[in-house]
Each structure stands twice: as C-alpha cells, then as structure tokens.
Image (cartoon, rainbow, N blue to C red; front, side, top):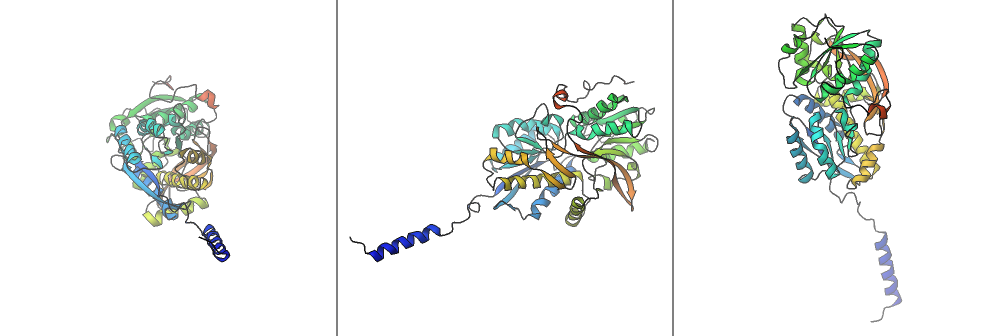
Length: 416
C-alpha cells in the first residue's frame, strides 16, 4: 500500500503534536503521603497527647494537607502507656495503613520498645520521647528527635541553680522512670560538679495519684526541692506541696514539664514562683510564637503548650523533607537524608537544627511562674542559646559514661 506525501506529512505532524501534549502531573497520579501518629490518647497522659495531636494537625490544616504536589493523610493510633501495645499499634500503621513516615512515642519505654521495629522497616520516624539514650548510646539513623533529650533542659538548670540562685543543698522527688532519671541526673551532675550537693533522692511511680507519702518524707533543711512531673501528677504534686506546708517555705525548681502550659491553666497560687527549664514557653515574645499562640487560641480555645509546639514543628519538619525530595517519599533513604538537613530559624520556640545524632540544638529557657494580667505564665528570666544534648561536655567523653539512671549514675554520695 503506497503512502502519499500529504499522508506522510500529516502523520508526522500528528506524531509531533502527540509528543508535545502535556502529560498529567506524575505526583498527582500517586497515592497520598501517609503519616502515622502514635500517642497515649487515654490514660494519665491523655492531655499531653491531645495537645500533641492538635498541634500536629494545625500545621497540616494551614497547608491544606498538601505538599510537593501530593495530598497528605494522617492515621492516628492510641499507644496508651504500654510499650508492647504501642508496638502492636505501630505494626498496624506500617503493615495495614502503609504509612510512609511516622511520629510519636511519648513515653520513654515506648520509644525504646518500637525502635527495633522501626529499624527493621527502615521507616523514617520522628520520635517524640525524651529518653536521652534514643539519640546517645542507642541511636539509630531512622530515629529523629525534634523536642529534646530530657537532660538537655536540666543541665542548664543545674548551672543556673548554683551560679544565679545560689543554691547549695537540693532534695529531689521525681518520676520513677527514665524521664525522672534523666531529668534529675542531668541537673545533679552539673550542680554537683560546680560544688552543690544533692542530699536526697525520692522516686514516685508515674501512675501515683497521691504524692503525700513522698512529699512528707522530703527533707526541709534544703535550699530548694527539685521535681520532675507531668500531666495529672504535676497538678497533684504542687497542690499537695501547698497542703503540706512546703509552698512558700522551700523554693521549688524542676523540669519544665512541671508547669508546662498543658497543665498551667489548671493551677493556682501553688505554682507561683516555681522555676523550671524547657525549650519553650508560651510567654515568648517573638513574632513566630505570637502567631503560633494566636492560631492555637483561635482554633482550639486553649493556651499553647510545649506539646502543641513540638508536634507543630514535627509536622513542619516533615513537610520540609517532603519538599526537599519533591514528594518522592517512597525513597526512604532519600527522605531520611533530607529530614536530617532541615533547619528552621523561625520556629515558635526559636532556631533549630540537628546535631550528628539527630537531636536538636536549640535554646533552653529558664522560666518562672508569675501571674500577669490575672493569668499564670512561665515568664522567661534567662535564655541559654544553642544548647545541645551534651551540654558543655565533649560528646566522646560524655558517651563514655552510662546513661543517667535511678541509682548508679550519678550516685548519691551526699545523701543523708
């Protein structure tokens, strides 16, 4: 069959036209990016989890659940406080919901329980636990932490208590699990190296509802009491400290969760004067934090807290990673590498970047609870800028020591 010149030219023109016809956006053809969120929505830390969840969703609301040309879906699961249960829920998120990235694990034992599975799945996971060892002796490339290692807050407080507040004798009452051990351990190490003395160490189960048996045993011949509590326990310990005549007679200092804004609105005069250290305060007077606070108050009618702030940052950090890989989140190695390169200079808490162990370098604020215009707030009284998890120690020297624990490190050589 012969082909005329006109037919041939017409065929070439049609082929040429087909070759330049715009193709559909490749990203739009793919499934949504699936994000898994794990938190203890029930149990004693339910309020913490609620603030985490609301802060996380707030950022995705602001970007209409889209990034790098792809839609974003969030799947949440209740981890409660049982490590085994949290692992089961994470398996469900990975194997049934097919998440591309995960976050959560509020309780320290939870994060350590899920770590081997995260590694086996090569799942980029932004962990929201405070267990120091997650980014120290037990680090894994698949865990990134964006809030803090616990002692990252209390190393500076140890220095501030000794050098500025002039304290020399401290008694401690803290949660009897990793949060309490790392919090008081970091404080004690710095405080005693400067010349102070920890003369008593008491521990309370995180599920205890009555702190009186512990408060009544605390020594009174000290310069201050150091407390590490969160959630309902933070409310209870300060109320009972007032009932048992401690408030107003012995200064109280501690980890910033003690008076964090997730519980501060429910406190009264018992919280006045408490000095604590944390990487965030709702009272920070910066453009980024003022915008953040206004968004929280408008959408949820609540005060911005550390838990709001941390998970808002987690969401933003994820999205910056999605953008960096142009939506190619299925390439987990590429996504992980991109997440580790993210830096944020206008976070509500201040500037942030990651160290070589995937833990943030950030400001730590010394705060004092005051009543301002009829409302309690954590007034920032001093800022330690660019604090890392190893404080002023060289990382290689710091890691020669074991993790801060209940009894062995640091010990209690001055206990009476």
